[in-house]
Length: 54
Figure 1 (cartoon, one colour):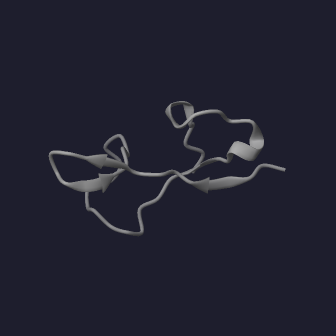
Figure 2: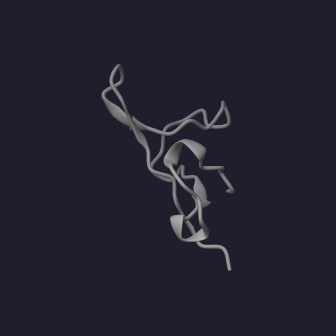
């Protein structure tokens, strides 16, 4: 079983907001934009190494 969770955004000092990197796939900001990553329950260590699954 694979447990997924929302990827946590990072604070962007220049924009003064929480941001996620969508690698150019998103053109309009929306609270509906999200990324799913494997949960720590799956043995994934550290936020830097999270692979976006969806």
